[in-house]
Length: 362
Ligand SMILES: C[S@@+](CC[C@H](N)C(=O)[O-])C[C@H]1O[C@@H](n2cnc3c(N)ncnc32)[C@H](O)[C@@H]1O
Image 1: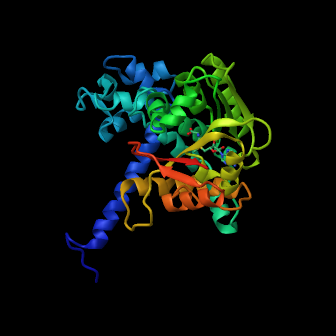
Image 2: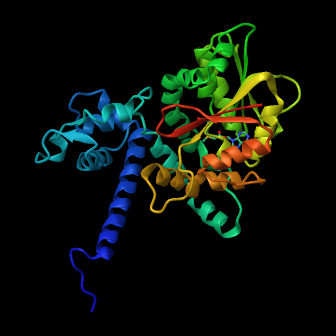
Image 3: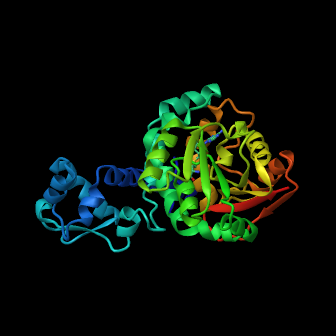
C-alpha cells in the first residue's frame, strides 16, 4: 500500500499541478472579463450588482453572477458582502487590479496576455497535429486574440519607453532628430504600434513597417490614420528576409520578431543591405538566459510557454530555414549577426524586464 505523508514529494507536485490548472482557469476567466467588457463595466459603476454588470456588458445575469463571485474568490475584484444573497452583493475592481485590468496605457497592463493565452487555446487541435507531423500552425490561424494580445501588451512599452531605448544609442538618436528626414524600417511591425510610436517620438522621421501577416498590416494602416501619422508611416505586407534594393534606411528596428522569423540570418542580411553607411539595426528580443537552466526562473518559463504553444509552430509554418522558438539566447543572436555580415554587435544597457536590446552595425 502507498502511504502519503505531509512531506511526500508526489503530493507536493500534485498540489503544484492543481494550482497550475487553477491559475490557468483563472487566466481564462480574465479573458472573459477582457473580451466581454466586464472589467470595463465594473470600472463604470461604484459598487455594481450582478444585474448592473449583466446590463452594462450585455451578458446573461446568471453568468454575470457566477463570474463576479469567481473573480472575488480569485482575489481579482472586491465584494462588499460575500454573505449577502448573490443579487444583493456589490462588486468593485480592487485597488491593485483596476489599472492592470483596464488601463491600456499603464505599464502594468498585462491583461492582454490572457488574449494571447486564449489564442493558443483556440488552435490546440492544429497544434497537436503539428507536433505529430513536424508541420506548423500559421500565425494567422491564431487569430485576432494573438494579434491584438501581443500588440496590446507591448503597446505601453512603446508608449513610455521607446524614446529611452533609442537614447541608449546616441548616434542613432541624433540622426533621427536631424535633417534631412531620417528613414526607419520597422521589420515584423505587427499592428504597427512601434512604427507609430517611432514617428511620434521623432517628428522629422518617416517610417515603413513590414510584416508577413496581412491582417496585422491592415490594422496598422487604420491605426496610423487614426493617430494622424499616415503621411509619415506606411505599411507593407512582406517577408523581412526579402527586403532589398531601393530605399536606404538610417535605422532598422525589430521588436520581438527576430525569433519568429523563418530565416533570421536572411532577415538580418537583408536589413544590412538596406542600411545607409552610418545606419544601424536595433533589435529587442526576449531577455532569457545564455543557456538552458532547469528548473528555470519565471521569465524563462514564461517565454518557453509561448514557445511550445505559439512561436515555434508559427515559425514552422513559414517553411523555415531555421525554427528557433521564443528562446532567442544572446550567443545565438550574436552568431546570427556575424553570419549576416555585421562586424559590430553590442548589447545595449537598457533596463527592461521582458526584452534585451542589441545594436548591430558594420
Ligand atoms: C511577437 S509579434 C511582434 C509584433 C510587433 N513587433 C510588436 O512588438 O508588437 C511577431 C511578428 O513578427 C511577424 N513575422 C513573423 N515572421 C516574419 C517574417 N518572416 N517577416 C516579417 N514579419 C514576420 C509576425 O507576423 C508578427 O506580427
